[in-house]
Amino acid sequence: RKEVEQDPGPFNVPEGATVAFNCTYSNSASQSFFWYRQDCRKEPKLLMSVYSSGNEDGRFTAQLNRASQYISLLIRDSKLSDSATYLCVAGNQFYFGTGTSLTVIP
Amino acid sequence: DAGITQSPRHKVTETGTPVTLRCHQTENHRYMYWYRQDPGHGLRLIHYSYGVKDTDKGEVSDGYSVSRSKTEDFLLTLESATSSQTSVYFCAISELAGAGEQYFGPGTRLTVT
Image (tube, rainbow over all chains, first blue to last red; front, side, top):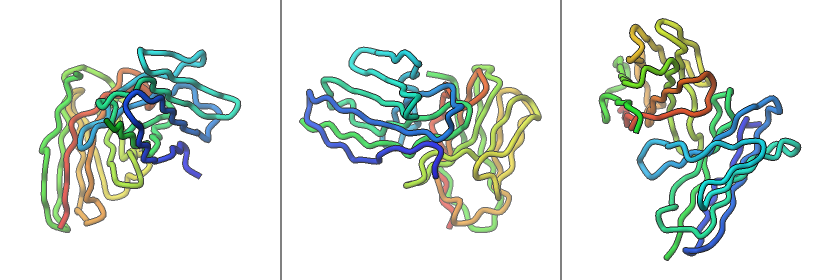
């Protein structure tokens, strides 16, 4: 079983839609969680941290569910510029998910 | 953007030749990492460093070695390149331990023929 698993997608959504991704992790001792964004043929870039209480940054909301061992990323009012691959990582373990591909369609 | 550069950015080499990739940072971060990224596998850790001359193996370290003689430089060497090492290699840095808030270099696209 992989340490971190993501639905690879692709998710194709129209502009303005709300889309959510989940990422499950296997090690219940994981303490820190993050979402990264990776554009095609570019390096991953930190999008946001995931705190126990959840956190929000503009149109993006990240949540942690320790009981079910998953983190989620919600994107509201999708923009064309949100098209990318979104990677999750469970901290202190060096394991990244394989990424979820999102395409926002005009 | 974090000051991380990688060189070369692209390289084509032949099977059996040694290859060294360089990662250079200007952030003075203690931790540095080398990953490879392949379709279907995502990012996989090859080696990491927690200080000058302090390194450890990651998930896919076979066939690779690393060195860190200065805080700012982390070298990845493919001792004898194989076609299975064709990949995109990313270097990353972080201030704190663990795989949390890392900042990535632009990547090196390596092709082994």
